[in-house]
Amino acid sequence: MKRLSIFLALILMAGTLSAQRPTVIREVEGDYVKITKIIPKVTEKQHDIRVGIGSVSLFSMLMLDADFFGTVDEVYSESSFRQQIKSADYYKGAQYFTGVLSLSYAYQLRHWCQLGGTVNFAAVTRPYYDNITNEKAYDRNSYFASIMPTVRFTYLNREKVQLYSTVSLGVAVGVYETVPCYDFTLFGCSFGKSLFGFAEIGNGLGGWGRVGIGYRFGSTKK
Image (cartoon, rainbow, N blue to C red; front, side, top):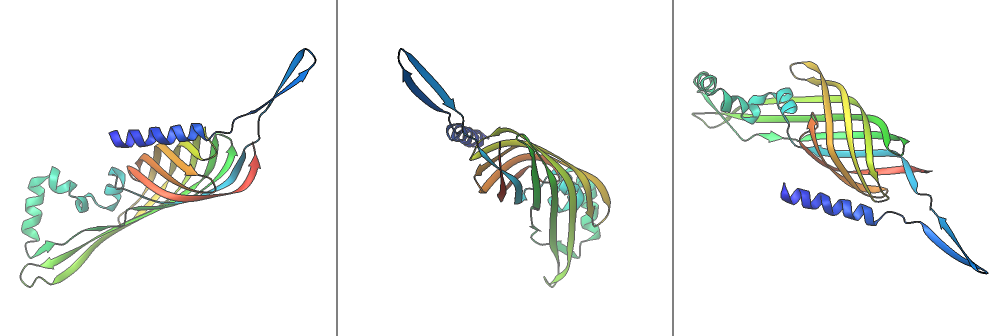
């Protein structure tokens, strides 16, 4: 966390330094000095497309089946023991998790607000092997997909650095059920102009930590 705090502080300083400064013109007219301040117009991009990957979160564990991530084994040791007796003919192999993949689009409504949508997908698989022959008996798989309208609030908007938070609400479809879902970006930072990278700390379906790249296009003046 200390390294992350230092990293975010450096990004914030870079954004402050990269801000466009007003141009000051001084003209001498007789005994008077005329000072003119010219504030340049900054070009903003109207459209924002992003692809990213997120870590596991409590919500995504529940959608995928928490037993994949050891939660059931750790909390309910007695149930885990009974389950091991029932499945004594097999043992678990290595687990493979895709991460929470995301694709999002946002439109610039205001200097501080964007409106769009986000699609997420994640899958996990674990092979089971025969205790006697050591041959693979079967695979256990789970997945989910979601779609959510998204609102992004930008509270630092520089040419190369943006700091923001997002709120998303929608529906997630899993192997076992379809449920309402949510996702919050508590703190997000993007760095770059048209082509940019981003890193986020969040809570919800998208994962506790997310990284990715994006592209902005369609210019407008602010």
